[in-house]
Image 1 (cartoon, rainbow, N blue to C red):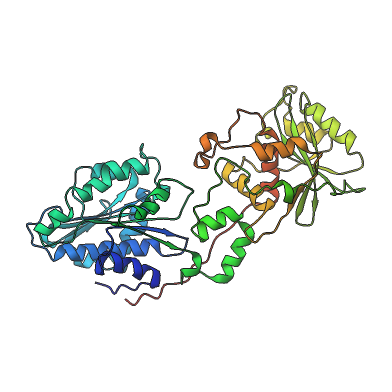
Image 2 (cartoon, one colour):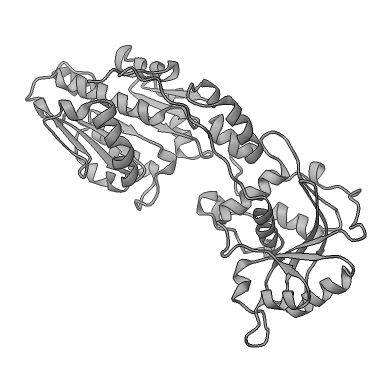
Length: 443
């Protein structure tokens, strides 16, 4: 078997689970770049080693790794186990398609996708890795239901301390790993240590990973808003709740002293096509900053809006950022004319992607512009833009759940921010990432 090389944080968890035996359920809340997959694979290997030491007739000698998707199971974990950790050489047989390694003495290591984990029901599991549990979606059930009705019973019923003692074995255990995503069920699991001594929780930020480039992290701070950076890189459970534009703050972002458009200055207009509303947010681009200076609404159609813009901002070049669907759609226009062609016929430039960006991306662009993780503010609003301010403050996610990426339409306040999302994402798309250095495995 290849040598296992762990950094300090990973070693702490392995020691508690397999050496000191201080915990049965380890909950690891870790940032990007911690090496969660490698930790998970190493833990599974150690569990296999423990089972190999037991007599052949001992039942339920199963180890499971549950990944969010089948692709992650076979593309990440199988090569990691088979080649990097050498499990293929020690197994009697193995199958990438089945995601399974069969070892002597009836020991089995299986990689499950979350979607398939329901089939684990009724089996006995000596050790389970639940990986990136905040990403467990699409299996028709919740993390809570999966853990309480399927996974934990597989451990507790077959590998309780009482049953394990019969075989001279350790009791069943689990390693639950994720990057946080608000105050969800993973957060409940993380806090279970307060009431149950079998549970222990760990938190590791990006500063505790030897695999991340500090200089690259500083660049990431410029591209992410504070909440997203806190979640992804400092493992913070902080949640925006159902507020979409959570970085906006009246005291910081409303400025009555913003100067109006100067002579010859370009006028930029974010437009949400909606007959009878035609919500438009009018702003200036000044350096890297967006200054929202005006708004328009109530026009019955695109033609009326276009003429009003040209009349009001005579002498200025007008650049619009309409809903990309306006390339094909018409708002009460004559046959053959689209919203885009109507604007262009009035001399208004149109800038838009070929299709609407994902809601999550366009929301992130606005949140980052209001304030990035470095504390920089690059968007301000004049108080005369009352509808825009109301829209920013009151636009919410459906059912208080940002994961649905669906904006609530009940109050009808979202039109101004819908248009603003298209403009800001077009001008300042969010692009982030982190550079990961090579591990120093001693194989």
